[in-house]
Image 1 (cartoon, rainbow, N blue to C red):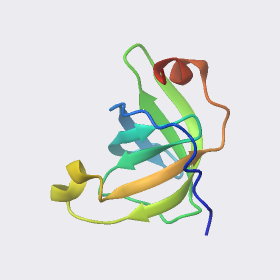
Image 2: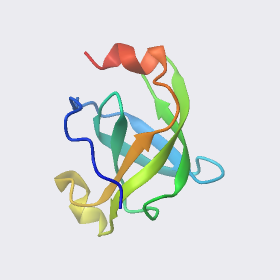
Image 3: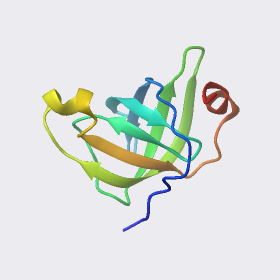
Amino acid sequence: MEQRNQSAKRYRRRVEVRYGPAEPECAGYSGNISETGIMIRSTRVFAPGTLLNLELKLPDNTVKLRGKVTWAREGGVQLLPTGKVGMGVRFVDPLPPELAAILT
């Protein structure tokens, strides 16, 4: 099991996220974002270790990058606002400047 990097500052930014192992066909939204990864709130989660293609819909454009699932919790849609369901994804690509710009 991968160890989580709890030292990275997290920013509470809600952006639409599309994701999937092959194509970004699942939909969710961010619970928080850091320079190293993102918490995706969604009832559709993938197992830790899964590589995902991500599309983050920012106000001015869409950022594409890849990430690796580090943890996942399943649950019903009623738990989405609580942050108790979803998954943590560590970015494997360098942070795009457009995404870095909103993390302030």
